[in-house]
Amino acid sequence: MKETERSLFVSPYNEAVLGRHPDRKVRIFDTTLRDGEQTPGVALSTRDKLQIAQVLDDLGVDSIEAGFPVNSPGEFEAVKAIADAGLKAKICALNRCNQADLDASIKAEVDEAHVFIATSDIHLTHKLRMSREQVLEKAVWAVDYARAHGLVVEYSAEDATRTDIGFLKQVIRKVEEAKADRFDVADTVGSITPEAMRYIVRELRSVSRIPIAVHCHNDFGLATANSLAAVDAGAEQVHVTVNGIGERAGNASLEEVVMGLHAFFGITTGIDTTKLMLASKLVSRLTGITVQPNKAIVGDNAFAHESGIHVHGILGDASTYEPIRPDVVGRDRKIVVGKHTGVHSVESRLKEYGFGLTKEQLGMVTQRVKKLAEDGKQVDDAELLALAYDVQGKSVEGQRPIRLEEFTAITGFNFTPTATISLIVDGEKRRTSETGVGPIDAALKAMRSAVSKGITLDEFRLEAITGGSDSLCQVTVRLGDKEPAPVSAIGRAVGPDIVTTSVDAAMEALNRLLWAKAQIGPAGGPRARNG
Image (tube, rainbow, N blue to C red):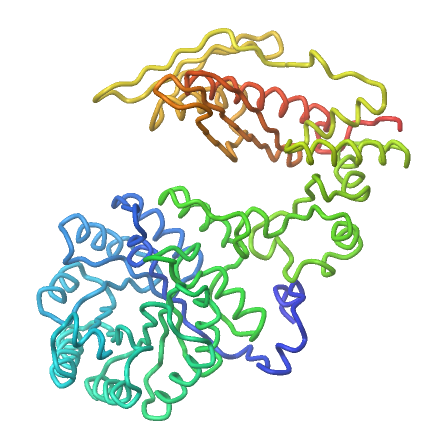
């Protein structure tokens, strides 16, 4: 049994129904750079696209759909740059069934052409205003033309899941005769169920031998389920995007589909699952699309546990409340303290800092954590440690290792935002300047640079409290550090100036973080304390 399989604790009924297929290979076709970029509000530069493509290649995807080269000169340059980057993955470009599109892809020197034309009567009548015969003619021509120019060709029947099955069979037979390499069933508006998807794939396989792919959208929240159902019926490739981004409600999520294939079917993909979190974070940062906390696999809460009952089970054996071991997907487990926290959660977190509290003291800390959470306060590591000290009768007041001495931020038209900050850190003066995308970004970078390059900005939240241009704002900043052991701290501030309020919040978080880090020994072990 592979190491990955030993880290999966899924239901045994999956194997009873689906079987295990360790020798079966399913291709992962990533369209983050094409369909993912069609997410409203997302526009990636060539540099951004190259960076994502390199991470996808390192992740191990089989094909990267780099874009739609005929769309614009900038899009063409991005696709060409990715095609020239020497990646291991096959580089694909999207094309309508016309010569201008295909000539742009040929000129971009991609490996594969993804050609599409709609096949449903809805699209034929209201969008294309073409007959079925005309659609067939254009599809066959496009496949012929792309093949003649040395490209691997994947033909997509747009809106396939609302297409008459008789006509869909006719289409797959015709493009197969034209030497198409793959046939893609596009669930363009996410309107099919898993059982219906199985039906379509099985019907198409009954008349054609070319590999079938699926491209599922998430309008009803079924994109991953439909993709896995298609594979169960014999599909050999799945279109996905990182974090499930894409048009409207998005596409099938790469991380969900891959882990589903591994966990439920035992199917092989070329994906290095330990790098899924890295890819998720990069795409989120470059697109500006935040991953929802409860998102499967890569959401902040995917491996976070607060309930006392759950934490008790996790501390005994992770399989009690986790279907996947977090390190398999590049994650860390989080034990969170809050309203539903039990004594075991508090004890586990405090032991990491060397606190050996009595049973009575642990109960007191737990009750105070619950009270704070019920009052709407988020309890971070520093807050928990302060409660533990207080229960022991020790004060942490006045322990602020950093003091802000001077701060300046400059921004303006045609000027790179720059911040200069002067801090007193344990009596030592440190002065640093940094640039950023804005004055807040520059200021926070300067602060972290002055203290430690290892400090990460894990959360920044800005909220307006009152109306008007002179309104008060509230800023919440969460900072983290993994050395010598993972720790995080939150700072909050309220004020009329967004930049200075952000700095005030960051200063609070920074002091709390360093104080919490000081409770850990230099080698990552706890400082000795008596209960």
